[in-house]
Image (tube, rainbow, N blue to C red; front, side, top):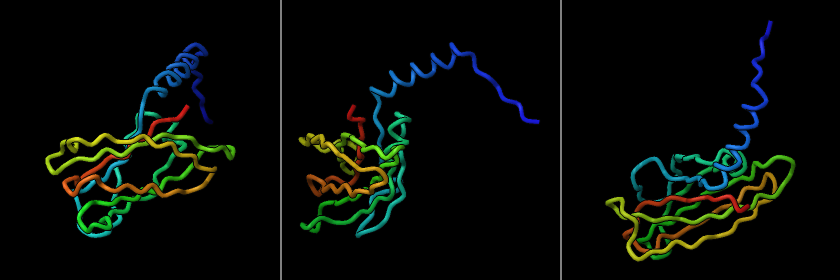
Length: 146
């Protein structure tokens, strides 16, 4: 025999309202798990979720590292999938933050915000090149474009 627990309607309304307000101001990030690597390699990712709704819609598929054309700067590619329900387009803003070997934000670098539009079930590559060879780590920052 299965038992179902019923939440009081007022509690469900409160939770739903809280989720709407909290999700609007939050961001999600994707960063690599391991220390900097040389050459081209697929890397494990750490997906830090602060906006549950956005995490259901924009799903990181894989992360690839390599070197830029100058042979020194880090080049990264994150493939992102639109997992949004009902065939809707995903509209999301993102930027890439770069860090030096000591974990400090690269001096003098101001990340540019990019707008991304992805069709339902589409996978798109996001490519970023470090602004300087001193940048050895990064974070992709995603913000819902509502």
